[in-house]
Image 1 (cartoon, helix red, strand yellow):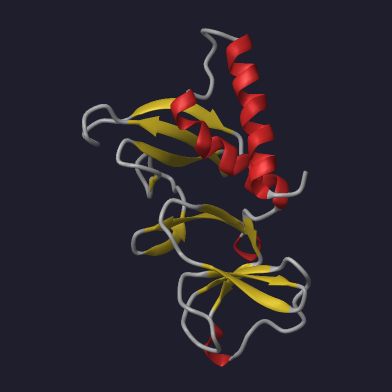
Image 2: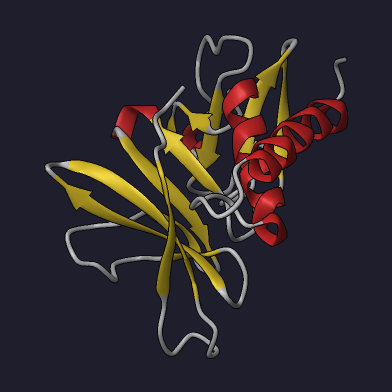
Length: 174
């Protein structure tokens, strides 16, 4: 089993089995399972980490190791602003920017979310600071508690007027 889809299928089956065996317990709603599957898969494959934000206008990172990942904070030397670049077998592999992703930036020691306008630190001291929209009715909220981020999946049943906490996530960099 080596393809991403095979790994995601195994994770999806494990989550579905757990949820079915624990009816009535707080858990991951099946309609939002793909978000959890992607997050778990990214954690297993370390795709959820980046070394740093990098402005490529004056050059690319020197001596990168295999699987080192950077977020482009400018355009130049073949890199495009906001996209992520992972070193793989001597080549830089580009992942196009899209809103709704979460990544831990090692040199910044913080989680970043991909918002419509670009990458920003996720969370902050206030309860409504920088929520990361995953869809029109689902968002990821981070609140600092004892200097550590606490993440919540929140749902809105009224078009984003009010939000309800649904599931606390315990995320840590891998």
